[in-house]
Length: 416
Ligand SMILES: Cc1cc2nc3c(=O)[nH]c(=O)nc-3n(C[C@H](O)[C@H](O)[C@H](O)COP(=O)(O)OP(=O)(O)OC[C@H]3O[C@@H](n4cnc5c(N)ncnc54)[C@H](O)[C@@H]3O)c2cc1C
Image 1 (cartoon, helix red, strand yellow):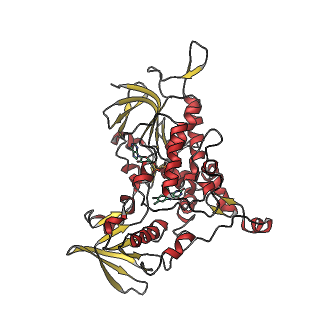
Image 2: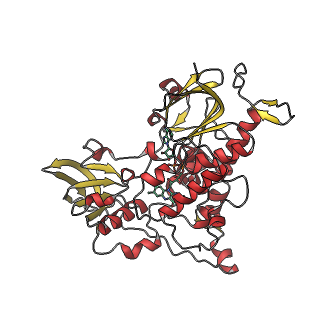
């Protein structure tokens, strides 16, 4: 039994959920979008963080003009990092203008059933009958902690996404495992907060992105390739601006692209801030990790095979996110079992639909199908357009007395 009905329920109000809702609402569909707008950005990223993406690649997808990040901030230059707060404010402004009525709740269960095809249960207890569900829960459920660290209690080991306030670590020795922007920025922010960070990286050396040029000559553009939402270069442009083509590449190539496009590296503007306050050990492979007194002893091996033990009070795993449908416990076990996956990620159609009709995945979960841009805000517009147009084509319409076509969830119509 449901309490209400909706053509579409979107789980998650981050860049992908909000963009999809904006496109769907513009096409006239009844949409329920569940989640506080930009919550992951506001609560699971550290205070003082800056975005790595350029302003032109930090826009949510809107069906109308005037809603991009650079429309909102016309003077923001290429190479000028965007503070986290500015981006959260932009996302919330987008939500308030494009999608009035986002709901500050959680989707706690999605199962097959009801007149529409799905029954969606919210944290408020409400059950919604929906024809279509868009899973736009972002990266949070997929936080990856290496096995060596996984068994330790959360007061000793945490994932980087668990922290908003790094001030909690003031005066403490903290190991940060990883070599990407998240690891390096976390380490710098820990140092700013009065902690003693120690970066332990597997890579032989830290990698840094180069300063982007605001104006590029014709020659530079011809030689280096066009600028895109993922960086410069001809191939990079393809993956960033034509993700629909990526789907046609062999699976192994797509996976390599996701792994190797924008490999772990720090933003150019962070380089000077990573100073002597941050200890960095590269070429270290994590071995045994054990609780020791009030802290953790991390055994690592260097490239010569030498074992080194680092003792700290806490370990932050800045080790990224790996999509895995099994970790989406809000999908009922029966539904999860029906979603075809490859190496944990859902196999998606050209319209982001899973093997179960009416169930769509946006964001990181779509990266193994559409490539690396799905890991970033820049992919949101493409995903939102495709999903919205597919849903609208499949949703029956009824006519209102005034003759204006409207969409409606009609209990007796099957989903396909
Ligand atoms: C530290 C860090 C820095 C980053 N910097 C950049 C950057 O500079 N540029 C860039 O393009 N990308 C960046 N990214 C990647 C970024 O996370 C993604 O690009 C972006 O968040 C994708 O949007 P999304 O909507 O898929 O996910 P999210 O922004 O994570 O939004 C998903 C939302 O769903 C909500 N949710 C989860 N489960 C449920 C549920 N059951 N019910 C309801 N709501 C739910 C979450 O609270 C969240 O608010 C960064 C990631 C991290 C971790």
